[in-house]
Image (cartoon, rainbow, N blue to C red):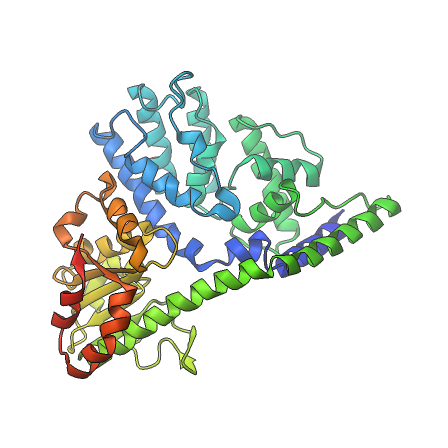
Length: 420
């Protein structure tokens, strides 16, 4: 089966609609790691302080889990395990203070450790508590803390693992999850050159097998099954052509995001600022060059620990001395604004050089209500202090040429943006 599985991995990696290219290599996935980990840390703090409350809706946990579930390529429905089921009274971490504390200890232990042994020990501890309704779906949070040690978990991944290995892993049991984790790591090591140290890659492969996109490799001694399986692989490749329209829409979305970044880059330069473009967007093609053309290649050293998150903000305008931030912009074309807000908070609250900056969420004209609703989440209680402004595409499109020609400083931009 090893050779057949290698062939499957090769075909899977080349499929633009499989999870490897649509999710694992997706830039938003990488952006989400720090924000989700930060959110988990906030959940732990609230549980320790006794301020978490007894409801999922409106909690910091809901915000974090929603950010995971929004990665719909493999995590659609990930929030279901955490939703309160009143008739069953599960998961029992809202009304039972002891269970809530145990849940917090699991998250804290995994956030603070750096070895597989420590992660497994923390999982065994939560398993020993026998908390009703709190099962291996929690691994989806732990994955974003330790992507090289923890395997994501859902029904499709389990089905894919059983199909590929012949295993009999069952849902809802931590001991079965740990068994699957060991098996997944063995598979990953066998095909390490084709996969990744990040276990999200092989989890995506198993998800696509378990959800029926790909058939599992047959036994090598069954010639008829091998031929049928190879024909099935060809069918999957042919099906990708039918999905080209959706891919075109996604590319158009990326292009729009880049175009708005380009507008902000050029406007910032025209208004007298030095401009930083997000580290993971710098090489994007734009107007015959790259998005980072004419931009600074480093942020102020005084950002300190906040720099890791701030460097992913879509566009930053620095004052002419290059040592302080004048404005920061997150462009939210169609995705959740959660990660962008977290990066804004890191800039404004985590460093002195960003404390006085003006913060803008740049979004389509019809997303104003969505943006305002997100900002009202309890997890963002400090956002109102920062005066984050909403800058619609239409206003930027209409006025950017005049502002570039006649404006200086931030005043022209402040006049067309609104505080939410």
